[in-house]
Amino acid sequence: MTAPSLPDDCVPYLPRGVRLHDDKVRGIRVLLAPERAISLDPVGDAILSELDGARTLGDLIAELAARYQAPAEQVGQDMREFLTGLIDRRMVFLRESGARGA
Amino acid sequence: MDDIGGHDILGNPVSARAPMAMLAELTHRCPLACPYCSNPVELTRVNSELSAAEWADVFQQAAAMGVLQVHLSGGEPASRRDLAEIAASARDAGLYVNLITSGIGLTQARLRDLDAAGVEHIQLSLQGIDAEMADWIGGYTGSFARKMQVAEWIGEIGFPLTLNAVVHRQNLDRLPEMIDLAERLGCRRIEVATVQFHGWADLNRRPLMPTLEQAAEARKVVNEARLRLRGRMVIDYVPADHHATFPKSCMGGWASTGINIAPDGTVLPCHAAQTIQSLEFDNIRARSLAEIWYNGRAFNAFRGTAWLPEPCASCDRREIDYGGCRCQAMALAGDPTATDPVCSRSPLNPVLKAQAQQDAVSEDVALVYRRMPKETRA
Ligand code: SF4
Ligand code: SF4
Picture (cartoon, rainbow over the protein chains, first blue to last red):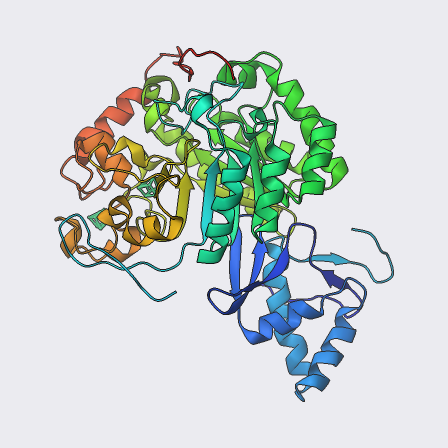
């Protein structure tokens, strides 16, 4: 594992073909992607639910740290690790701050 | 979603959890004739295919049971003119909709309809890296050029794309070029699957069986490409069974995660299950999907591990591979309850390995193509 090094000003987003889903039968939240369905714990769900394709990673860290009253450093590390795993699997995409478009 | 269940083939009680995925074989019709097609050797005729309305009902039932993803497949799903309508009904049911296609029969207009219908991902099959190889394997002149055109349209619309490369002795040496092609086409994934030698492929073992050297080289190519392409493209690789020490896991266990619906509504634990002729399979036209999944005899037949014979019964890998593939046990041992002969602990393994090596050095390049029985077109 390389240390996650996502910059604060990148904008993570769920690309086309990847989406969150309410699995009512099992009572869980899942991430649906090509050939994959990943069940999410509340933390994973909270992170991915915030990805709106507009806010930067830095914004999201601040937002979640405030909501869960946790140190931003810890939240940042957890988020970077979680997102890096999904980026490697092509389930989360990144765009440089500012630029829009899928 | 509580466990409900019946009995395995020996009468042991078994239970099942909710299914996750469905493979919907919309038709067995296909313009190509790949000699390793996973469809049964007995193909379903057009006039017994489920209607779009019947598929819509199947998808509603599936979603209510907990199925999350549906793979629209065939044959060639585009051979059905009502494909977009079927896709839309799957999406309406709340399912994640994946289309598995050769691309032949898709036009730009049809792809736009599929986009509007809510298709979320496309898997495009690849028979070879150029027209010469691909058209020969697919048995269809012009298929490669057509496919490349379709890939371009897919990119323009923006569907996420996976290239499904089926590899064997005739094309495995060109794996690096296949990976490059996937990259050029902007694929998020490439699936490199060695031919599974059941059904049609079993008739073509001599021309298609990879050599040990090829398999080892392919492994190296995949490992190197995974490093190089990390974060850009995912590579899923299914090596050749016949060269392995242990069998591949039967999909988390027989009838544990997926449901396969054949074009005529026969409900199967997996695409190859009909090769096990001692099992009787229910049809969705006669029973509900839930009843078939939880109580159907074919589904319960090999659930769990209690039915496993020796050497599996006392093997520490039995919860990992569930004794391997039932259909392969049927094909190679003539007994669906046998240890998968691909396993090095199977008494049949030495014979199988010797046969595979012999097939791999065969100079035979004559292919037995998949063919539909003659019929009047609907
Ligand atoms: S029996 Fe074989 S083909 Fe069927 S699901 Fe298991 S491994 Fe796959
Ligand atoms: S003996 Fe059976 S359980 Fe053990 S590795 Fe072989 S197939 Fe799997």
